[in-house]
Image (cartoon, rainbow, N blue to C red; front, side, top):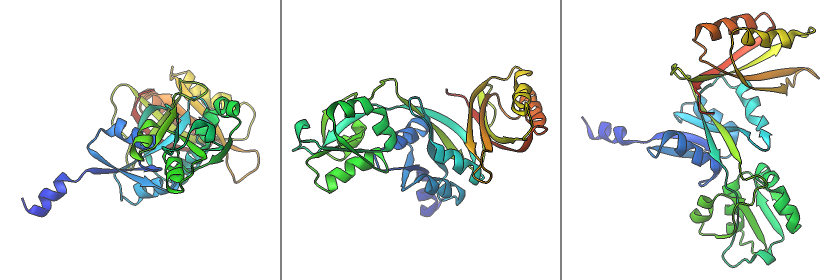
Length: 282
């Protein structure tokens, strides 16, 4: 084996995520793949999808829903746009903490920076202190902002790892309104996963515009004893007041009952897109 081949064999698999080093999305990468990967930060979710599509990374990891604040709508829309597969899911518990420059005291704070969802998840704590809030592109990125700009009258909401990475001060822990705060992430690939016997499938479909059609469509799953774990509607963005439905159900798309349900769904839908089947974690 040549030196070049040996070096290639030691290269870590690249996995894209949105945000800075220390972001919760990076934690999701490590939780799913372990430490033998190279997380690749991206400026936005679209760049994650593009990176997987262009094969500059092996996989991508994106948040899809939070247990408190609900769906990450932009990623639902990107799944419709890009022809990528879901090959896995992972849940990360969010332990929000208040972070500042080392010189800052809690009484000095006037403004708190973080991602909009993190700010919303800590709404009661922030309102109690009557601080102004400023949205940032990422939780860890908000820590980077107050550090690089030397903001001594500001703080950020992020993870403990972000505080450690940027050598910042922890002012307060567990500041979320609900401490049972989880975000579910989906793993992107060019192919979905093989059956394991305990799987989940994600699809997108648009129902025909006739009375009772959604009831009939979902009945194809109920009649086969297929458990629906999530259904979400999003505007089509092409016709006013018409919607696409995002559906998760238990089972692998190659199972007989699931394959039959998907075939029958075609009768009630204007289109059906299978995002992928993957091992069920949640």
